Image (cartoon, rainbow, N blue to C red):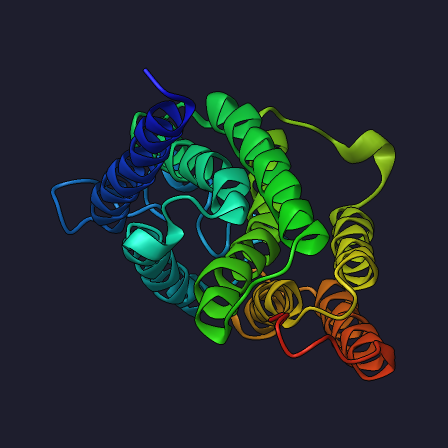
Length: 272
């Protein structure tokens, strides 16, 4: 068996794993939405992740961003199956991490569906770690076309930004169910602190990504809906809302500034 044959087989396996993982993730999303007989995420796990469950929970409309992320992931799964991407070194780097994120996403949904909120915490933290690694791979390599920049880099960025917010909300929800008292600090103070950390993460991603828009858009979207929920929902907190809005402005401001200051890339390298 020649080296070329081995590489061809490995590439086909990678492409197939990504495609199968995308199917699993889509099935999981239908279950999580309640469309396939499952319980909607906001109602599962005793409502621990509902909009009014904690001060970090975003408004329900925020979850609409999953539709955009899933469309991007499906587009990537199809695009990476094209013959031109089969032996692309960049897709060899990105394929398996993206597939792992899809499986972890489905595992997180199942953990919530089975009311295993404590299990959902390590799952979403691992998902976040995988996405951070994948995002780094999109930074150290360059897309060859605008299509690749959109379906690979753009999707990974959106995915990462949203999961940053989701991880903060998930951990907070779990702590609340355990009876965590905040070491004597009130809920507003904790909410401001957690939201500030999320904002700092967004600024850090802007620096590391040299002004990439994907993470900033989804992270800011999530934090903006945290602000909306804290101002108009059943669980009102003006300090939390103010912290969320300030974080949004900081993330967008730093991202745009870095985007403008970053030297233009060669014509063969496009980033999103």
